[in-house]
Length: 145
Image (cartoon, rainbow, N blue to C red):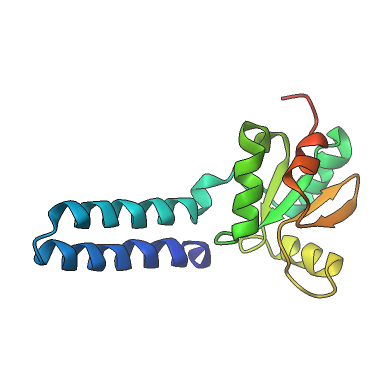
């Protein structure tokens, strides 16, 4: 769990230091803007941006029942973030598995990617697709929910 928060915490700490240095030099406005940028970067790279993750076993079970895609992701992955943003509100029509929180999820991704933890890996109808085009994923989302 802590591994998912390392990058956001480092961004907040470094942003605070940079902003404090700028404010100490008299640039209050610049310091505030820098701090805001670092806080925004921390938020975007945190697990909070993604839908609630569930375990790989549960996600695969649910997907077999309703046909929704399963997205394996990890915090700090720019491709996962791109997929999440491009899916918009439709992201909730798939199951999200954080491979840093779920060892079974990491094992599924490694099995699909020749031993590598390449994300996002999206399973549709039980078949893996590595870093697929977000438009393609959106087209494969279940219309329900």
